[in-house]
Image (cartoon, rainbow, N blue to C red):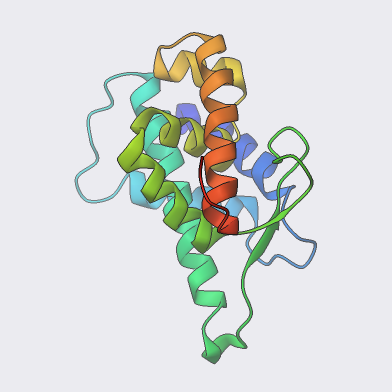
Length: 165
């Protein structure tokens, strides 16, 4: 884990730079929480870089969704947790995304196409580039780009309630 700690911090900083200005979760806290979960009682034997970053992206997603759910409870003042997607990740126009709704939509997408769901997880939650995502998943950059566009369109429709074609 010490070998990838700096990489996780870089990814967390990249991701949290896209958050709203009053966001209270900091990149170090996100990395430490992910680190604690990844290095838990029975840490898995990492098969390769792809395996590690796939699990790390999933853990970061879980942490951010739990954080969003916690912030939206009445005990904490209510209101949905919002984050802004940057231009490289944005859907056709700049949107604020509810992480809990995104998580639900990603779960639905995973039932239809697990690879597209993993691409969104790696790109959005782990902040990987198309090239890095390609390397991690062992697929071509063209496939990542194509699935990325398709997955974003599907998620947009799922989250806005538009009928799918």
